[in-house]
Amino acid sequence: MQLGYNEIMIVSKYFEDINDFINLEIGIKRFQGNMERFHFNPIPLNQHSRKLFPNIETFHIYNKEDEIFKEGRIIKYVIWYDVSYSRYLKEKKEMNEYKNIAYTQEDRNTYGNTIPIEVKSLGFRCFYRCYDIQSINIPTNVSKIGNYCFKYCSSLQTIEIPTSISKIGGSCFSECYSLTSLNIPTSVIEIGDDCFIRCSSLTSINIEDIKYISEERIFMNEAVLISIEIPKN
Image 1 (cartoon, helix red, strand yellow):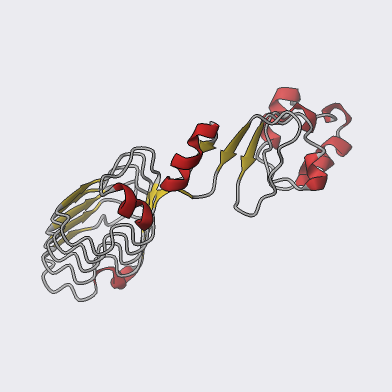
Image 2 (image 1 turned 135 degrees about the horizontal axis):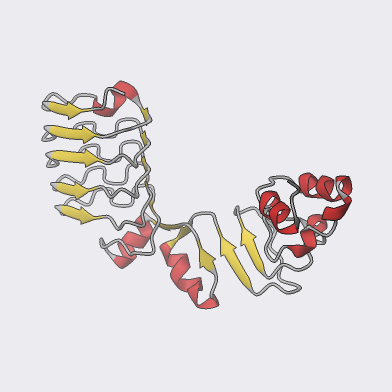
């Protein structure tokens, strides 16, 4: 079975280096012009490699350090690196697409404790020292909870972690003195250091299926914890 133009374009969009694109067209004559068929850039570009993708209409910005081009047919930008919610609000009128909107501590101070549905991650110390919060609703779009996110939320009693969450950062719930129980869904694959340290009321926690746990440092100094369920497999 031979790959056609459409198939090789699908395969090549997963290339990570410009040389892979160049070698494909040099090595296989019938795939010459593959880069010209792209209407988006599958990798970050520089002044040289930009010329190899002349028909881009949607420009993807993968990292903060990426070069940005505005000439040619480009009519839309897709930003992949973390962008604060404040920046998203300022720039959304430009009709750009933001893949990873983070709710930062500054955002929370400005817009309040209700997490907007557009948010994909909770940033470093987002709810740090929010002493009066008793419960929090995390939207199902959120996939990551940052380090120290809820540290010192001393009145926090209940929090439901949605199945969209894959990572819980270090010291995330440390010193949450009023938290009594917690269910961590199978979607979570990583829990950071000291995540539940000094949660003095935490008596029950259910960890369904975690691929990486920072071993003993999660529950340091938890004299009150009486029930923890971790799958044997």
